[in-house]
Amino acid sequence: MTTEPIVRARLLLVEDEDAIAVPLVEGLEREGFDVTSVRTGGAALQAAEHADLVLLDLGLPDVDGSDVCRTLRRSSDTPIIVLTARGDELDRVLLLELGADDYVVKPFGFRELVARIRAVRRRTGRPDATESERQGVQQVGALRIDRRARRVVIDENEIALTPKEFDLLARLADDLGTVVRRDQLIEEVWDEHWWGPTKTLDVHIASLRKKLGNPTWITTVRSVGYRLDVAR
Ligand code: CA
Image (cartoon, rainbow, N blue to C red; front, side):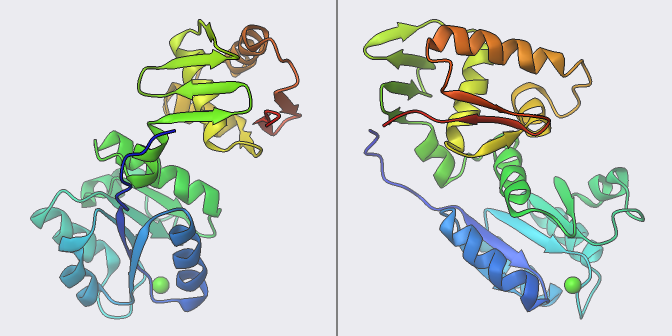
């Protein structure tokens, strides 16, 4: 197991609705993030310099969130994920022009938001605390995944995986015991703009199962995704 110190990534949540902000802060703290929550654009601009990533609601009581986004982007390159209830009106191009790195449309799933935070931080070269923890060695039962060396060992025998098979296994292992949706796997392991046949995913899973030699470890959840379970 890794013994490196864990540095928590600092998230700034800018959201005026308690019904959204309170559970979000709790959930994100549980995920290992250090979360500061503010309700106004003015407070956001003051607090942003201490943040590693900003989650920004567009509908704020004092100023328009899109102005906050533009202002933040002018003064720093801190990643910004916009939380918008206006999915239809604000297209991706406009948000990217404002300087946002990504956006989620309300109501969004918590797992989806966490996945986007991690994806944005990976993409912008700032792997977060949970991420650096995940860069280490993960041992579950007989399975050992070394993300830094990109090696997989089962009962002391190294398993030769292709790069995509490794990424797929590592992604499933990130959410051990939980179903990871097909579209998430395709987006995160391949590319978010990957439009190839989703059959490719099944082919890689089949090959991975065979190489792991424990076909029960990866469960197919029909038309949803896949789940990795390893007996401890
Ligand atoms: Ca709002």
